[in-house]
Image 1 (tube, rainbow, N blue to C red):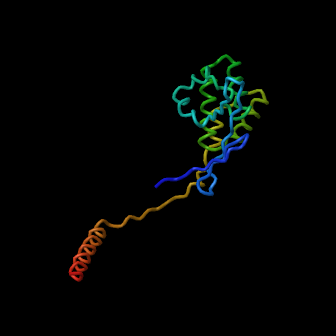
Image 2 (spheres, rainbow, N blue to C red):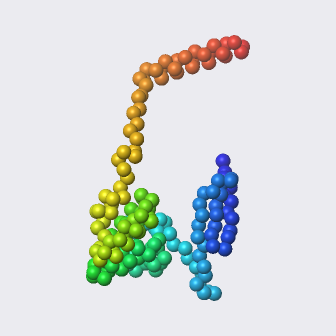
Image 3 (tube, one colour):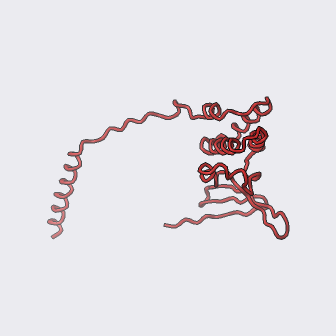
Length: 170
């Protein structure tokens, strides 16, 4: 079975549809010059690789475009100003991963900005705790399994009825 993805191309975005259902809207990159194309970098696409090697963030060519909001860039620069590039990379990557996993990019950016405006570096453990999912939001599911001999009984009934149907057809 195949599906056709329809894409509507606009000057600033691409809108993707499966049938009439909108699937995703993507930003379009602008050319930097006549010889150099524009790039759209989304941290969600590279976050798993960065988690394995967070220090790659330090010399990443598209690092500034990677940050989804200004607060994340400010966070990275604030940690670097304190002279700890390793911690800057680790904390920034972990907070980007948290934003992606918990879908809290805007709220997390606001919390980071509040800490930075107050003159303190954000605490990763505190932010993880603040943006963790509510325990009560996950419903408890009780599964009652049928005894296995019920399946044997169903299989024998099916075989008998198949033989009886064959006999009637002859």
